Image 1 (cartoon, rainbow, N blue to C red):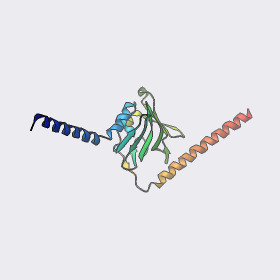
Image 2 (cartoon, helix red, strand yellow):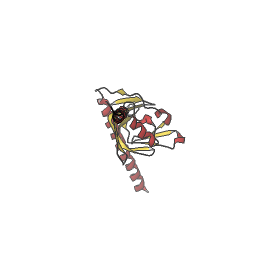
Image 3 (cartoon, one colour):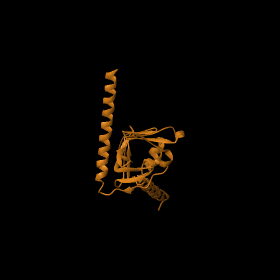
Image 4 (cartoon, rainbow, N blue to C red):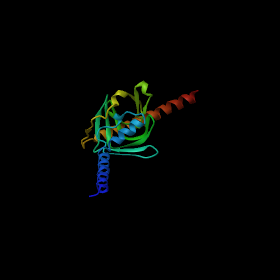
Length: 181
């Protein structure tokens, strides 16, 4: 066999190994994208199976199944999490809900104050939940959600209705006050 034949065989084997290694570390790209936008990698749980991001920052992360992770409170991840990532924030978020008092609130956006503050904000519509940035240093373990999660969906819907009614009540109070002036 010629030296060129061995070189080609080695090159093909090397390329094959690189492709296999890239495929095996595919879930790492989600964490790399978070980090490259100045966000902590622990915003997504362990076990991201697939991750896509386009040039506009729209992304989708896929997990094997819906799951919950424990921080200061519980956070629920759907099997698909999507949003638009930009430096220091994720907007238009879907697929994540945070628990507060026995209700689940959909997380609409995540925003990082400057790194020095050590605070990350979860916009859940009704309130702005603040967490220490240190909670999100590493991807959390995520426990699969059982198929009996109907109360979770109902709690999320109830939280949305409460947010809408509080917003409407506040507008009514402001309108009434302005009319009296």
